[in-house]
Amino acid sequence: MAVILAVIYFNIEMINIKRKINIVLEKRKKDGVIVNHNVPIFFRVTFNSNRVNLFTGFRVDRNNWDEKLSQIKKGISNINGETIEEINTKLSNLENDLQAFFIKCQVKKLKKMNY
Image (cartoon, rainbow, N blue to C red; front, side, top):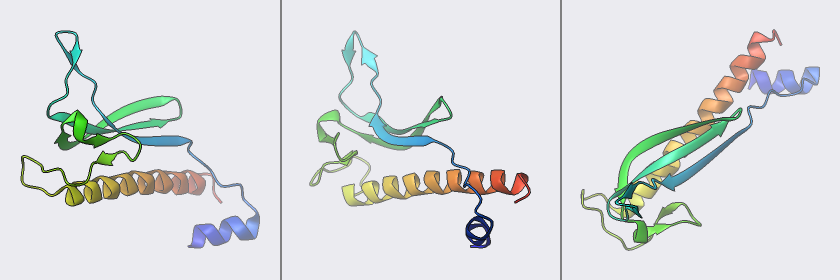
């Protein structure tokens, strides 16, 4: 809150780390064919021209993945006993944690500039 007030009061331009976070499926090939069964879900994080893939620990069959929504389709079961709603919620929470991490880095960068 204090940082936000400082930005408003001193008219400081906020430091912004340009970033993009996508939830995607791994595109591993086996014998020249993309694997479709039990595919790892990961975050593809791009920032400052760098790309990092962060695996979530969740897996899904490719035909059970909604590309547009970046989540598991409704009504699909998981072999580990987790409900799809739980997994989608965990993925959303992880994405929020990643966004919060970048915001924290922006604030630290702003503080280092002695604002």
